[in-house]
Structures are given as structure tokens and as C-alpha cells.
Amino acid sequence: MANRLIGRLPKVGIRPVIDGRERGVRESLEVQTMNMAKNAAKLIEETLRFPSGEKVECVIADSTIGGVAEAAACADKFEREGVGVSLTVTPCWCYGTEVMDSTPVIPKAVWGFNGTERPGAVYLAAALAGYTQKGLPAFGIYGRDVQDAGDETIPEDVKEKVLRFVKAALAVAQMKGKSYLSLGYTSMGIAGSMVSPDFFQEYLGMRTEFVDMVEVKRRLDEGIYDKEEYEKALAWTKANVIEGDDYNAPEEQSDRERKDWEWTVVIKMTLIMRDLMIGNPKLKEAGFGEEAHGHNAIAGGFQGQRQWTDYYPNGDFSETILNTSFDWNGIREAFVFATENDSLNAVPMLFGHLLTNTAQIFSDVRTYWSPDAVKRVTGKELNGKAKDGIIHLINSGSTTMDATAQQKDADGNPVMKAFWDVTEEDVKACLGNTRFCPGDKGYFRGGGFSSQFKTAGEMPVTMSRVNLVKGLGPVLQIAEGYTVELEDDVHAILDERTNPTWPTTWFVPKLTGEGAFKDVYSVMANWGANHGAISYGHIGADLITLASVLRIPVCMHNVGEDKIFRPSAWAAFGENKEGADYRACESYGPLYK
Image 1 (tube, rainbow, N blue to C red):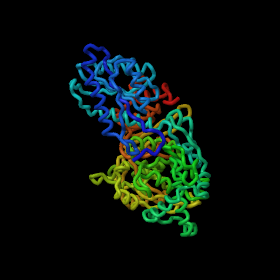
Image 2 (cartoon, rainbow, N blue to C red):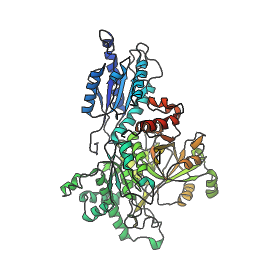
Image 3 (cartoon, rainbow, N blue to C red):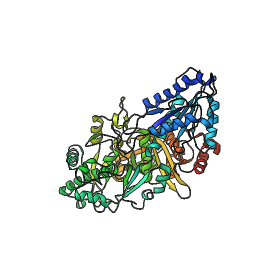
Image 4 (cartoon, rainbow, N blue to C red):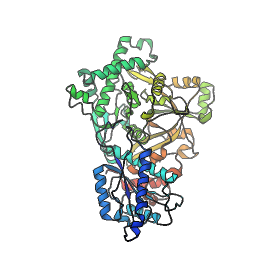
């Protein structure tokens, strides 16, 4: 397990702040305060890991912080250690603005111990007021129930908030300084593939790297890829990848020789796209030093349509393999790679990947099927979670194979796992339930192969999407729900009305009975674009916290109000949580403005 990107992984800095009055007060609090920091570090380090597999590391200040000098010493240590997240803890009163963390772009939270012996809550309120007054939004963490002074356990509600904040803040820190790799540019007029450098720079702290698709063709023609790995990949593909049926009209079908050539091209394309993202030292050994570096891309996308796919095999196989938790080199961290270079779908895919460590699904939010329409077309009624209607998530074949739902937990339930939990049996099951069909020549004149499967079983998932709104900026949409499995004959009838060569996920959002979640149709009607990013698990609350750190307002969600966790300053912008979110994000502006 290793970080494949340039730059050290961010650490979590823990700041134990204390009442600075000596000759009895400070001395009586030293052990309790430092133990709070140690216990918080233990919780974080034992619970969280990065998507690359490494455990999260915490750094604690060398001493408790009772005043400005110790706060400065802590800040200096954190800078040396590469701290990207700041968590302040205390059981007592402290001198709020004197001990605060004033580093502007590092996400901050303060945990004030709920005990009656010392006023941790009083300090927490004073500190948060200071952060708000100085324009440095911070999250406030305060347990619901009073604890005894000697109680070193962390209550469950405090754990939940600490971990939610740290996960979101680490996601922010991991994106900073990395790149989005745009291979090609706008695909068929899709607005999301009109990559906005200002959005990536100001809101995410990321670079945008633009590489014309002709660079992929150059590397194909000039053999700029690892030849040894190519032979390994070709052999693995022949042994493990199942070619599906050719649904093209007989006169449109390519012969065997052409298809075999297309396989060689799409495998090489996969190597090339990966090398463009993260580099490859093997290329330097072959005499291609410049190409060996890559673009340090934490996410990317391939335009494909139409300039590439009218001429050459499509990118579906490459996108599928990159987005999957395994390839010919074995089980590994999935990449985040968008179809049609839809950067605004790559971003929520990246959010989901950094929050959950799992592979992400890229799909068209294609069709709403009402119960009546399903009954009319198939003669059968929807039932279970699907009874109120379904949304057909399907795209041109690039969805991660993890989405087959063939990975199982200890109880046999379908799941999508972090790569270090994926087994060889999971890999075989995912491959065995996927076909790669020759591309639809109506869409892909140059051929290629599109993944074909249906998501089997019921899994909790969250669909999200970033949209750019003229005059407003970015907004985030969130819909928690479930995948559902239809009867085989119902699935076949509905699926074949769209394109049977593409992977299908049937999605049912959780309904609230109000607004955009009044019914399933309303979710579809309020979705802001043609694509959605789907992550395993109900992570809407985590996404809301992450969005607030980045100052991206959430325009649509079905997360319970009790789960919403934003900086304390948001309360000063009005009672209605969503209106306050918009006003706060507008007032503070993007994190890296």
C-alpha cells in the first residue's frame, strides 16, 4: 500500500488547549487535557485510513497550549509535520483568541468537554465566537450528556462528529495541490466537460492539466508504454475478460481480426491514460523521461466522443478498468476517471472516493420509470423498495466493475469494499458477472468494448453531483437511496429499450414526501445534469460537511437534519439551514480565493 501521488499525505494536528493560569489551575488540568488529545488521536488513527491504504497519522502539540507563544510553537510544529487538519480539544476555560489556530486554509474543529467541574462549554462558545468574528469558520463539537471530570471515554455522538469532520477535512487536504487531468476537452456539448480552471483552483485548491487526445495516439504509434506490462495485461485480459455478444447489425459487425486489434488498442490506451495521470518510471528506463513524470492527477477524464470514437476504439474498457479496484497487476486502489471528461461528475466521484475509500460509479441519470409505465411495458408490478418507481442509471460502459455488487461482506450481503478488503474471490465474481460487448457502431464508429452488467442485490448508495450556476457558482446535489434488483425478465425488457451493451444500476432514492424528494419522479426532475456519481453507503452527511468546508452550498439533499454538521458560524446566517448554507458560502467565498 503506497500513495501513488506526489506529495506527503496530510496529518491530523491535535491541539490540547488549557487555562494558562499557573500556581494550581493549569497544573491541575495538564493530565486531563493531554489525555483528551491522546484519546482523540487514538480514535482517529484506529478508525481512519486513506484511499491508498495507509493509516491516518495524528500529530499532537509538544505541550498543552495556554497562550500565544505555545500556540505559535504548535503552528510551527504542524507546518513542519505536514498537518492539513486542525482539531482543538479542551476540558476547561482557555484564553480563546490567544490559543486559537489562525491558519486560514486548514479546516478546524474544537471539541469542548462537557463536564461541570470546568467550563469546557464556555471556552468552546468563546472560541467559536472568536473564529466567527475573525472569518475563520470552525466546527464545534460538544457531547450531549455531561461527563465526570475523570471520564476519558469519548461519547458516541462526539465520536461521530470528530470522525465526520476529520474525514471531510482530510479529503480537502488530499485534493490541495493535486491535478485534474483533462484528456481532450468538451464531449458533445456537455457543459461538465467544459473544465473550469477557476473552479478547481479556487474551490478545491487543484491544478487543471489539459492534454490533447492526440497525445494518446502519439504514444500508441510510438510505443510509449511499458511493453512488458502490456504483454502481461493482454494475457490477463484474454484469460479473465469475457467478450459479450455483438448487438450490431450483421453488416455492421467487425470481423475477428479487427476485434482482436481493437483489444490491443484499448489495453494500451489504459496503460497510457494511467501513465498520463500518475507517471511511470518504466518509461524513463525506455528513454522517455518527460513522459515518465505524469501529471500528478488525483482525478481525470477522457473526452472520447466524438473526435476519438468516430475514428478509434472507445475508452469504455480503459475507464472501466481504471475505475475498478483491480487490474492485471492485482488488487489496488481504484482511480477516479470520468467518462466524456465530465469534470463536474469527476469531482463528486473524487469526494466519494476520499470519504469512503471505495470505487465510484459513473452513470447517466437516464430514465425515470413510474410503476404504471413498468406495468404497461412489462405486465408486472414493481415491489419492495422499487414500488414507487425507479431511476435507470446507465452509461456507455465505463462503470466500475465493483458495481456488479458481487463483493460480499461476512454475512453474504452485497457491498463495495475498500481495495484492501477485496478478495481474489471478489475479483473473480466481478469479472464473471461482466461482459465486454463490442461497441454500438451507432455511437462508436471506431469500435471498442463496453462493459455490460446489472448491479445485483440491494445496497445503500448515495448519488451526488456538482453543477456550476451562472452568477452563483458551484452547488452540490445529494440523493441517498438504494440499488434494487428487478426480476430478470423485467430488467431485460426495460434494459433493452435503452442499450443492452451498457451496465445498469436500478436506483431508488429515499423519499421525504417534500420538495425534490416528494416522489421518485421529483428526484429525477430536479437533478441538475445528465450524469451522477454514485458511492457505496449513505454518505450524504459526510458530503454536506465536506461541501461546507469548501464553501459549496448544497441545493438538494435527503439527509436528516440531525445529521447535518457544518461550521458553527453557519448558525449566524439564519434559522433555515439550507438558506443559511447559501448565505454563509456566499459571504466567505471559496476556500482558496
